[in-house]
Image (cartoon, rainbow, N blue to C red; front, side, top):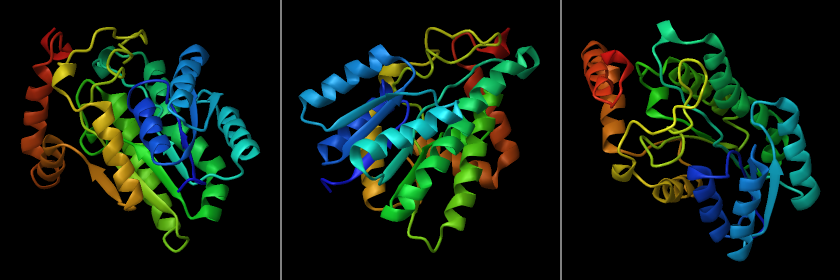
Length: 269
């Protein structure tokens, strides 16, 4: 596997950084992207110290030309692409009735269109290597979460896109995986957008009780290696998907009650 190349978007922290560590430890050359060049370079230096062959590309997932340039720089340096992990993402937390619509557009541009752009430009190379396209989604892509309308919409869209793509590529030898970590300790809730588009700040959840980014990355690596179709990682997530399929009305109440228990929940105002 030492000749293989993996691109990981949004890899300057959290799950993306952990994925870069896991894939490089298993012999992949790594391309990491992110908007913050300083943080991206710090991650690149850490990876290099551990022996990784890494290329850091400053790129905004929501900008199409950045994805095109990311692919070109990868080909210039490594000559191939085997795995694309669409990890770049942002969340939001606010009632739709109070939400500025630009917040939903921002979330869709990063979570959905970011996946579309990166996949579009990587796909010709992945077809050559019969490699993998991965979308880091969420249980919010299976079950709409109140207070997170834009986030749920973006993940539903991502999963629909990847399911359709998987079917198009059914006889092309390309592996498509949708991975849903469930609640994971990362920066995504701290950076989540509030009603006016500003960052939420403190996480409303007990991060210390969640699955770690490192555990998520290990599971995703194993799923890529075995070319799994879907990966729902937590018991709570699997139960939510199952119950929502068969008992959707019951789940409306359960999900509302669960989300309303969050500290400073918008439902309690």
